[in-house]
Length: 323
Image 1 (cartoon, rainbow, N blue to C red):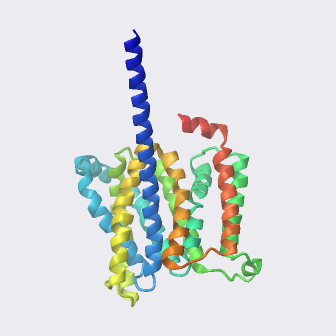
Image 2: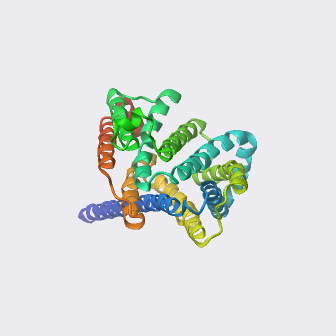
Image 3: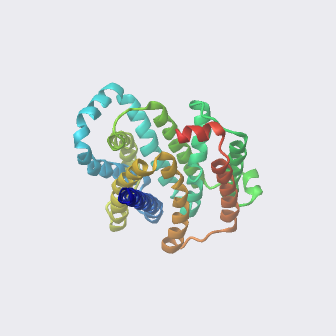
């Protein structure tokens, strides 16, 4: 009897240790994923004087798609069936989230600094929550409303650089407005993806959406080739493209998919906020950007809003998350 109890105890301890190690590995992978994603903003900003934004966007999604495609070969039959049944829906959602969104952000990085972009991108979960309230009827409590308003005010502070006079005279940085638009596009993509419920393997769906992004980005890229004088074949452009397409593209997408499977979408998604910190640190180390007072003031409002939204969830949301 004592031996049996000891054996069960050992199995339990071993299981708990294995689960703990697995959870730690999953969080490590998720953090690495957001570090790689942060590097995309740094690379895009670094190469912006030499490489047009839509070229970077097109080649990023094309190369990432080509790398990930062989990995999902076992699911080709289901993927083909889904394309035949819902091609336009896939094209619209994938084009919106993985092409239009990225293209807007890359355009914005031609004028705005990467640090500002990182703080604005932290708005994505908040915008998603607001859109989900209206499009999916998901619950949104009073604290979430207050938190959303605070976060929005934080972004306004950053866009006007702490000067209300800039807002009065509409003296705004167009790059920051492009990045805000990109954040809205990605949030819209997230809500549409939730509503669509395509019902295929997660990584296979990602490959299909990347294919849709390639098709969507192509006309923007071709127009850019005809109208932009910058070369996309110089050394800096190739280095940046290699990064955003492989470690910052295919590998990052794969790791994020893996982290969702291991942690669940809610816990994996919350780690998005780490990306903002990584962007600020990398922008300081690589690009020489420095945090300004308005960055800190705006970030403080955004963080306050996020804390209200995350820590004071409506009961219905908490119950749904547990389910």
